[in-house]
Image (cartoon, rainbow, N blue to C red):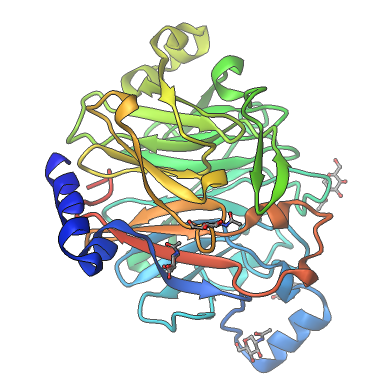
Length: 397
Ligand SMILES: *[C@@H]1O[C@H](CO)[C@@H](O)[C@H](O)[C@H]1NC(C)=O
Ligand SMILES: *[C@@H]1O[C@H](CO)[C@@H](O)[C@H](O)[C@H]1NC(C)=O
Ligand SMILES: *[C@@H]1O[C@H](CO)[C@@H](O)[C@H](O)[C@H]1NC(C)=O
Ligand SMILES: *[C@@H]1O[C@H](CO)[C@@H](O)[C@H](O)[C@H]1NC(C)=O
Ligand SMILES: *[C@@H]1O[C@H](CO)[C@@H](O)[C@H](O)[C@H]1NC(C)=O
């Protein structure tokens, strides 16, 4: 970390080009409109005519790299979101690449609760198992009331389904639930439940095929002083609770810790995984004695991620930027990596590839969640995936 800082500072002095390469997020892919690899022109026409596909309403919220593909989570926020899980190829066109539904079109057919309904995020293990949280069930406009679920797909076997878990109502509601983001710890997953009515941090054990949840109003609910900010020149108010989540790398600390933050807040919290894995400590409330307040971020964040060197990266929504902090430092040493008010608009989801790049999806998502916002007036680029070289790898490696 110290070495990399020196390189960056040094490069500012000697070479602007080198500095830009090391220091900024560069736009890699971008979309004016999200469109798909339709099976036939007739399918496309039928989707348009039936309003299963309303082009301007299609949005994306989560990205994850694996091998030569970028997987995309596309929750059904508005009507006519034709696909909820898909991918593009890393080699695709940089502008408006067509998204292919994953594992296929049938899985993305909303008409049966057996299929994917509304996916906000996912994580991919080093051996290519994608853990998908199908759990956006919020708002008057919720397009599904199917139980929230966790699906495990094998990316190395054409997305073969390996496992499915249905969350019980008391863990995540089929009406009002909002499984927001997920991190993996071998056979365990930690998931933020951002539901306004029944928020919490969910622990899932694959070995036991069982989930439990911890709740703490003071660390998980939006902060009264932190739920208003300005984005795109407009006031934004959010009561969204616990949302961002990141897991430190086992190479950096053992036990690892789960870090979380509310969307409407600045405070960052952490709790050790050996505490969370103990269902009894969780259910008795004893876990709260192990909750740590880490620090106060420069601004509100949505997504966060750790690399395997102990660096946490977190979005800074109203600053159009990204902050970073090393888990071995005091939080006062955190700093802003980049800010760009034309390209980093709503810093949502991060993913490392295996070549040392950190990728960031910025998606204007506040405009999509605000059902009164007229998307037909919104022109130009809506979604961008930008990349930033760090040399590190995901916390999972
Ligand atoms: C914002 O990012 C774009 C694309 O990477 C870049 O061309 C532009 O110079 C950046 N703006 C600022 C103010 O750095
Ligand atoms: C969407 O993609 C199809 C090809 O799959 C193309 O024929 C159609 O014109 C595209 N529509 C939009 C709105 O981009
Ligand atoms: C979705 O599934 C339903 C029920 O099986 C079927 O009637 C419908 O044609 C399917 N839609 C598409 C676009 O395949
Ligand atoms: C889900 O339930 C709500 C009422 O609780 C209802 O308004 C909505 O239409 C339902 N959505 C679907 C897709 O069934
Ligand atoms: C965007 O950032 C640039 C340079 O960083 C600044 O000059 C400009 O005033 C900003 N624009 C807005 C709308 O905040």
